[in-house]
Amino acid sequence: MTKDVLDMTCDVAIVGGGPAGLGAAVALKQAGVANVTVLDRESEPGGVPRHCGHPPFGIVEFKRICSGPVYARRLVQKAREEGVKILSRTTVLALHPGGELSIASPQGQGTVTASKVVLATGVRETPRAARLVSGGRMHGICTTGALQSMVYLKNLIPFRKPVIIGSEIVSFSALLTCRRAGIKPVAMLEENASPSVVWPVKYAAALLGVRLQCECQLLSIYGNERVEGVQIRDRFGVVRDLECDGVLFTGAFTPEASLVRMSHLQSNKTSGSPVIDETGHCSDSAYLAAGNLLSPANVAMKCWADGRRIARSICSEIAA
Figure (cartoon, helix red, strand yellow):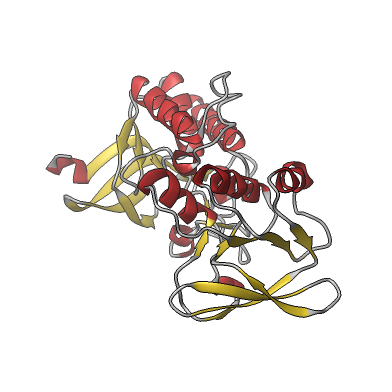
């Protein structure tokens, strides 16, 4: 990255290099927008699928079934082939009125000024602290995203017999990741009376030999240097200990909306997501939002399609 990149202008800047952001970028270039720049804080773009080493991805986008990493690489390759400029390891620090962004990269800080900015920062899973689960700080506690990063990108195994908390669609992804790594969960706990997603979680858990316990609440985690067990309350109100060597928190997604909360944009008081109109525009018309930042947590192809929808909205505005 050269010095002049630190202070630059473009037609459309996209914050986030996941399926929504890359889908928007490709659609904009295909529609004839000259200068489209994607800003991504990770060392490699592609978003969450980059460390989901299992299928199915790409059925709608590429008419084939891909693993997450293959799908992410194809998204990035397509964007570059269309002429999208992708700046990785570039963090957006602040959103300013009129489409001006403060950024930071290994080369220093600067600004990006764009006619339109698409916010596609995605979501994050709720960690243990935000769920108010008591217990000490020890090894063996993580979210699905952290597990997948360790398993698929770093060749690390954080535990062998964890308890999985949650039964959302991402919990199915967690089950597949565990199977790939030779991890054998001792149970999957769900507070509600039935799984959040019946298909495929309920059947996958049974198929993989993982006991799904509904109406079961995690009360605390205990252990010394690493997790040794958890205390749970079952559907009958009985409190008991369950031996395990890790706790895997899945789902309970919240929008990655820190930038929005700190900005001049109007946001939803509960979720933090930006308030948008029917065309995807935020309270400052220079900004639009797409993907899981708005409605967590959709699968990759829905985020990709939403990015393309936002691109059409921008193109219609330019044409008018």
